[in-house]
Image (cartoon, rainbow, N blue to C red; front, side):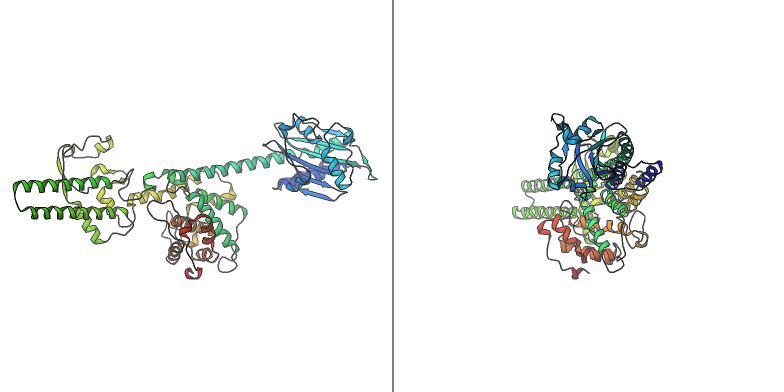
Length: 557
């Protein structure tokens, strides 16, 4: 016997749905309520998404005690592509209702001209008899089909199968219509989440694509961050044994790890890619090499002149020439080594560099020709540049300084460690501030408010000597500290950096150990990283085989 639905019942159901986030639970609550209203023995619900596939996602039978949700329903029927069904005749009752957006109420399904093969097979398998059916399409606010509710075998008080009356149909439809706004709202939320996810990955890939030498960094850091966060949550000892992360924390970490370097879109490519000290758009070592070539040629000319003038014996002149060439070759090799930046410069190196820089050569051509207006305006003595002049072998010229960068040759070759000078380092560090500003400008919901902190702290240090805010370990959350370790480990083991060779696993762990002992990264998280063998799981999937050497975790704890 059918049950009359009251306004209070509908209100109570609506309130319960408002608190629910799982669409499968929403579907079950509404369809089970509608099933009680029409006192049907069986009930099913099919969804229709943007892909135009009709999918059975819920089924329940009182007499057969069947209750299936989601993909378990594929036992009965596979997803059906609706556009293909338009050319097929006869169609199933569900497909007909979906295509025509019409309610179908039949006292006997087998007496109708539908494709009943699914029900025939079901009835034979379960020794059942499908008789009366009520099929109700669920439409969104635009009138598009988003689902189909089906009720099978209405029953009277004695349990006999009867037809669905028009009053029962009306009440059942009222309950089914509750599904539309909730399914539509959840679909909209999923679409926005998908859009945000796509935007995040597109921006992350754009940062990677900006430089062919860091093309996988934004993809790999999220992997390491998630592995380490999972290990931290699972650890059962130490200061992190009670550490937990909510679903919102996990999602915030995912977004932050993808976007932690988004500020690099403002960092000049030559700085990101700077493999040598003299590199800007190109490696300017060749300009200096050409000056050495000039000096060698001058030495050869001087030798030939002395030979013609018989100023000394041929043997002595030749020995002098060879010695001069050998000195030029040694000096150039030294300058070239300085340019690489892989070995720290000593005081003796700096002194030798400055002495070589003072060697003079004769320039004959007008240096003012071919300059941009900005370069011309930076030169105070244009007359000097316009006429032949003696110039230093390695120079710091006015036209090599373009605010805020100093491209002076001697200035850059004097860099003591690495290839980046002071102004370039400041510009690189600035990407964190830009990242924070960009993320602050995004209207993240409250549950994702930690994204800015997670992403903006990956260059902070436990001892407070990091940037941009000089935070200490006590001022940083665990996910923020995780980001710092993930960023460093990926950079150490990356195979696409032009300014360094990729580290072997043992070398990378040795560096991390030192950083954990010198206040750079969190010691507790580092120990979890090693003891849980996060490094090993990552290496097996993402590192080159030649980088993976034997590692004893105890040696790094």
